[in-house]
Amino acid sequence: MVKSLEQSSLYVYITNMLLKIKSSLHDYFRTKRLKSFAEAYPDLANLSVLDVGGTPYMWEMLNRYFGLAPKKLVLLNSNPVHLSDGNDYESSVSSSVNYTAVVGDARDLKFADSEFDLVFSNSVIEHVGSSLEKNKFARGCERVGKEFFIQTPNRWFPIEPHIVTFFIHWLPRNLYKKLHFISVMYLYRIYLIIKNGNPGHVHTDEWADGADLLSYQQLRQLFPDNGIYKERLLGLSKSFVVSTRKISI
Image (cartoon, rainbow, N blue to C red; front, top):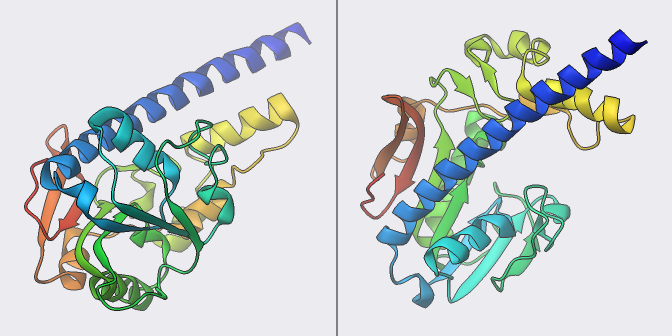
């Protein structure tokens, strides 16, 4: 019994440590990306922005660290929970940025042509489905925005960022989905079961099934006329940003 408790405590300690590393890295790269965004859009206070798949958290970070907020901000998300102040799954802090929340489909944007000065999207296009669905997403962003800033993880980076696993996301999708338990977030799922008796919102099988990462070539096919910029970690391309303005990452 004592040994079992000790093992559980060690498991919890290791899981917490890995999650803190994951969270720190995510915030580091988000802040770095937002710095590039802020430098590219110093006129943001004069712009209307649609964040496709967005949450208040990103804009709270932008306002907190760089003192920027759009003239008008619309957050579109298919999950209404992610649109609420204090209910954002990434932050319990209420947003200091004013925004309009819209529940909708990123593949079918119900807005007029060029309705927004800028369309922003962070790690969303890889979740929308097939190549056809990704094309709908890309064409919709081009249609409703005069400019856009779209980020997505690189398929060929060795770490999959959603469930945090190494290499297995390069396998055929049916095999990758079966191996989702070889991930940091699966450890977190077990941790929640130990702590609370249930895994809460952590469903690594669904997350593995729901993310289809893109390569540079696939992204270039979707956006043939725009700049694609590479975020690097240890010399490797960690993710890509498609931007109508030149950015420095």
